[in-house]
Length: 133
Image (cartoon, rainbow, N blue to C red; front, side, top):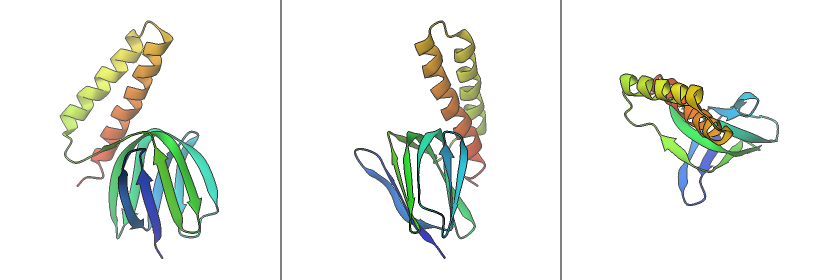
């Protein structure tokens, strides 16, 4: 049986589809959602949302937010998203190295925080490449 999933930002609907399985990037780790999941509201971290339908995974990079799971419906409210369309492995690897270097060289706590968000995005991009084939 499938469930409905909607991914929304403040200004647009990113996707509204059905899914067999959803994996959310929770603040304390990944949250897997299958048909019949218990009702839940959870905070989301910057990371990779994975939506599975008919043995095909669709990756979307989320930039923090909330998810509500209720009666086979998953609603994801996020600040922003990055949709992975065509990302080259070499480009994603360079972005990861750049983000890692930015954290190591950060001189203020704000710079370190900004760099850690970029590192999470770069890691999610690299992880998401595996789902694009």
